[in-house]
Image 1 (cartoon, rainbow, N blue to C red):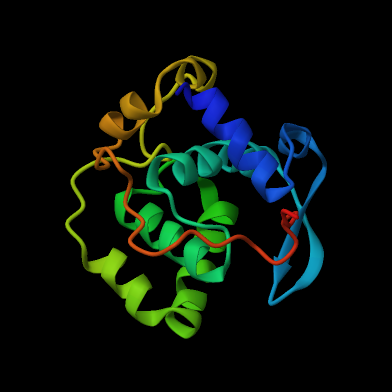
Image 2: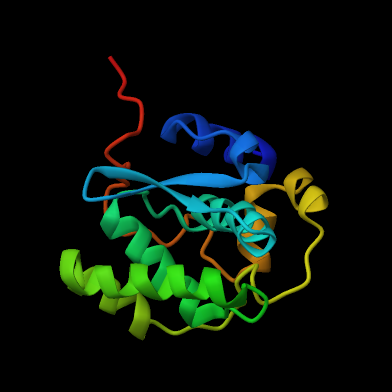
Length: 161
């Protein structure tokens, strides 16, 4: 499967759109409460890459999954993410210490050999045309992803009938 198709499936499953990538604000939620956060240029770039990290790793968008993904991103590198995005990532890791401490700790202490998309120069449009397998190879992620738990969605994701 192409990364673009996997990203689009991930977005649809979660009720997200590519339109939010360039919006002046973006939606967030914490324990079911929705709010808007600023979407400055560094965040606009990062959210695109963050979504591809979800595709590569298989981590969910519930609090535990976001904590796992943020722990993975922190271990792999936040070099080009900027202070705002780094603060969001570290906040999610701290939240993971409360909502899913074992899962978050497992990701934090796991061997980390590859990069995150935040720590390498990438051509986003070219990445979308690669396969998910190629994306995982680039990030040194196993062929089946990293998630060890059933992928759960955030509370505002559309629910199937």
